[in-house]
Structures are given as structure tokens and as C-alpha cells.
Length: 148
Image (cartoon, rainbow, N blue to C red; front, side, top):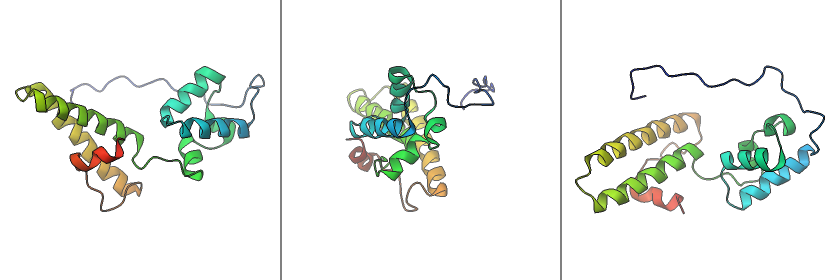
């Protein structure tokens, strides 16, 4: 975003994805594993990584027909803030803590401004999509409540 280049596009998945015959688990087993990992406090992206690396699960959406967020929403385990906004908020809190001790660190202040600008753009997007309440506002002091 802050560079003048367009960047390199990421890799794409194959056009035809289906459950492979070597995969031993059923959709119900995968859903219960997702729910167990969410109850342990793992984030959605971490759940996907743990299932991929630990159990050999390819894409959860292909096996269950649902995304991880949809499974968590059905079981009322979805976190109050979206994952990307939560991670950016954690970063902003860490930078703020650093700036309290190092007031003259202008690079950190610039990083805080950029991080909070990203958070504000995400808040605007998620309010428009209905993920966040229409009256939700980003407040650095109040956001610490969600980070526990």
C-alpha cells in the first residue's frame, strides 16, 4: 500500500478441488477438531495451520462444505473482533507501550499512525459489511478489553 509498485500476485489453488481418497477423516470429525481447537483459544488461521500440519487436512471448506468462520459462528465461538483487526490492534497496543517508554522514537510513531489507519479502514469496511455494529468506533483504550 505504501509502495509505488504493484506487487506480485500470490499462488492460486487448482481449479478442481475434491476430497482425496487417502484422507481418513469425515466432515464431522474435522468440525469437532475445529471446535476443540477454538475452545482452546486458537485463532482461525492457526486452526487451519494446525489441521493442515498435524492431521493432514487439506482445505476445511472442501471437506465440510463450510469455512472455519462459519463453523465457529454456528457454535457461537466466533471472536468479537475479526481476526485481521484483532492482530492489527495487538500490534498498535505494543507500539503504544513502546512509545510510552521511548517518546522520541519517530519511526515507531509513524508505524503507529500507519497501523491505526489500517484499523480505521477495516472498521469502515466491517461496519459496511455488517460484521461490526454500526456505532463501533476504534478507541485504543477500549480495544484493550478485546485483547485479553
